[in-house]
Length: 540
Image 1 (tube, one colour):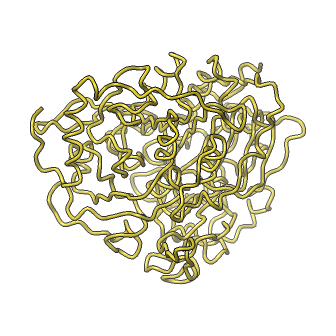
Image 2 (cartoon, rainbow, N blue to C red):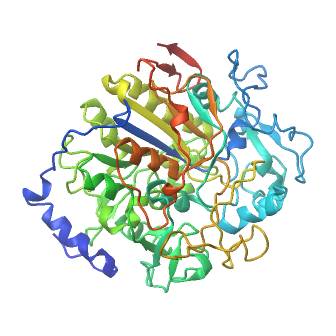
Image 3 (cartoon, rainbow, N blue to C red):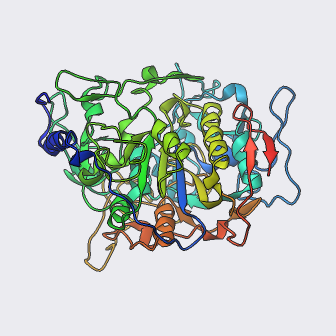
């Protein structure tokens, strides 16, 4: 193997690990023993999408406009009401400077809004929820702002565009009171998904281009260590170094435990599967290149972003113990989910290979290729719908369906307007905070008995969509339990009898998603949708 040059010191372990993978012992998968669960659910599949507030997708649910020429949505009888713009009377009598307005399917490609940690807090305006155009709105030349400039942030889709998501809510279970664990963009949400904690970030002193790094906007208060608040790139990922558009970006690493550590300790199979993770080549220093890209409605995701694979959407690559820096491929389909050289980090194609082989891991996190992840600017709800529906249809066709729970969740709101103030369970008063006043999201309190303070963790953040699709999901049900991103890992912990992560992880206080299930159901309920239109094609 060629010697790798210009890698930061924290990459040193990867070079030796990659050599070990060439030996027979290095590629031998560790067999997982049979395990018991606390429910009929033996497989949790988390589809973790990008940048949508609850009202952005469900503002008028369950009533769509249904104009001629658009996919029609018909509400089922006895559909429960939800807390949205329509039920709150905020469609035309809104405290913001622009009233909410409907985005049609023709407007599926929209501007990316401002979803920075402090900007989102400012838009909340101490709970008045009235400063979104001023603080998170983003419009102007080069994006589809419908001539509204920053007022485009008030736009919402209905069931004529987000048809599949409305139909999943009609036939399975939805929560209308779920939030980002903290304010902030994608990395914040991704870290909270797997650890319930953004604390433990450490700035890598230099970028791959050799310039000194700055923690401003990426770690609370601009400190060298603390809580992640931005979108720095993962320190244990060669595809950052080999992408010219990313090599000059700030890097961080994370310490502490994540859900992967708990699953490994119990010998449970698991994996994070992301579109474009498989390397398309290697550079002269033998570092992985992630060069796959696709064209969606918004154009080529390699032009809009870094291609199919976006490193800061892969949270396990921030933690040394769960990273796969060299993007090593699994040693076999049978090894997917076990501890081999891939270290539980995979390409999205590996998920479908494992499912086809009947060896789906106990816990699976799915991240679509960029063009299908729903992120405004380079993706859209229609391309997103195609990915989500194809994935769920494939799961429903599997013999394993009777033991599966699919969770659709999101990393952040993108700054899109949502009217519901979040419960503030974590306070912070670093310079980045802006919820109560400049530099303030309340007075931070110790997170546990050690007296530890975690500044830079103002949250809960904005309200986000949350759906459960399973043969055991309550049908046409809306749960109002307060939950957050760490409620997902709490469900995993409880289902497999795992301990809490500790060290301030919000899994310790997260609301339960159990109300969304009815485990007395017979485990056969299936609803197939069209990946093109999102309409129901078959119910079993």
